[in-house]
Image 1 (cartoon, rainbow, N blue to C red):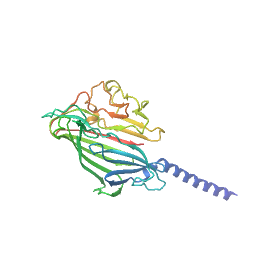
Image 2: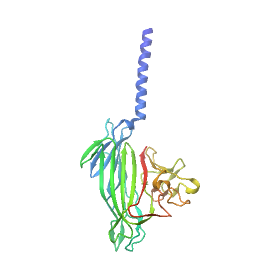
Image 3: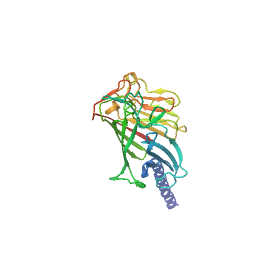
Length: 322
């Protein structure tokens, strides 16, 4: 009987060890799966998001200007131990962009304009003149790298990805002439739900930036927005992080889905570049949400920013699906 009891204890310990390993794997499963990348016109970044669920984030040309931006998000059931690189036929569309995530500009030339009036340019924004719609920017470079190689069309790769985008953008007072006055260089580092974004904007001539938000979100597929660790606000009404002078700098916000199973954390480095929020007055908030369903960081507003030819500004931030 003694040997039987010892054997029972031995097998029980093995059972508990297996259970413990299973629990640990489940808790950290997102990091157990290799990200997949597919270049097919757009770039599809696919990763294991939750147990048996892949997320596909599509980055590509969209909007009237056909400039590169965050484009669509899909969720797809997957019981295998490998992430699907392609968006399957049964994948569910979680979000389809109708607007910018990487923001446009209100910018004008200081060396000679064509009479155009205040308007956003770049991104999803066009200018209507004489009942015609005119583009205000263009993407001139769109590459995705995996390791040390640039992916060719219709190819796949596994692991982290680095996406390089270059845009040329007109001023609202150079649209008639079709003259580009700023260059925007964007780098996106994507790895298993984290999208680190670095943006550098360079003046091609003397310009004045009147308004620029930079990192922003489209909130249609979410229900609540939370600034830092504050209360959760509805996306259907205006809210903000509070005046910078009294509440300080809010450098992150979260979006929560209706069932609270999907959370997107958006953050900005507040140590360098536009993230210091030196280009807004003290009475303005560093983050705000409009009732039409968008949340913005407030990078240039109220004061404006002059850039001389070849002068640059930058910011660094992150989208993270939790």
